[in-house]
Length: 272
Image (cartoon, rainbow, N blue to C red; front, side):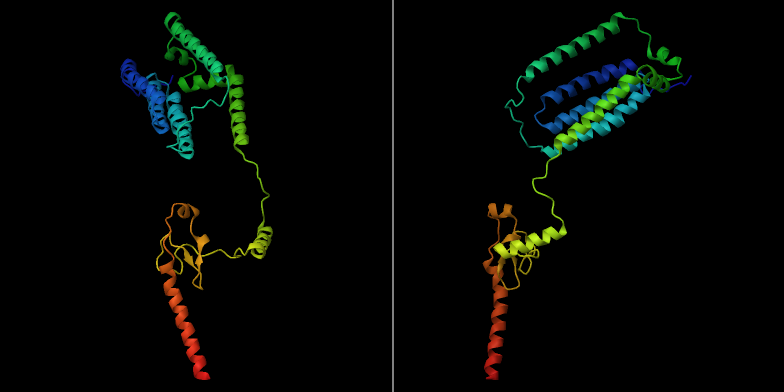
């Protein structure tokens, strides 16, 4: 029999110390106004639950709780929250009709399960974890034996359900292409047609600040002839009126062109 070193000194001390923290963190999950605060409160609940598993000499559940739930699933929640937006306020408009009926039924079913579990723990015989895992040689071998013998069908069914849910989420999140994807040849032909029809440049325009006296992102690029490339500035900056005046930016280029023209005129006059 494998002797496990308890990670927490006393099970009762761990329970009475961590149980109030878990209750407060669970209330924080429900009542927090920001999604990030709710996710962090949920992480605290999961960590405290992992310590409870360690106090009960269940190392497999302790590691699974930390690595799988706290380290993987909760991080996925945080990534989704960051992608959706932290400052986005949730809409209070009901989009799913009659969902409260299913919510009430689910809450009643969960309450019945909790009451049944508590009554079974109080009234029923308590064998203890040590006696339950003694015949299999420890907690992890006993858990593996139960999963892959007695509970193998529910285990595989749950795995199939999770895979189906993941595939369904991918299908629902996949967006259809509104336009066919252009290859390099088709893209070049489209550029040529746009240049013939409305004069769109074939080559990319310079970035903002190029050929100008500043490299600020709000400064429009100047073409070699001194004209302003208005499309080189972001449309967001244009909407916010954060564009630098191009009048003074064009002055140096125009002065150089004027000097070249004067030199050309003087050379022409000298030859004549």
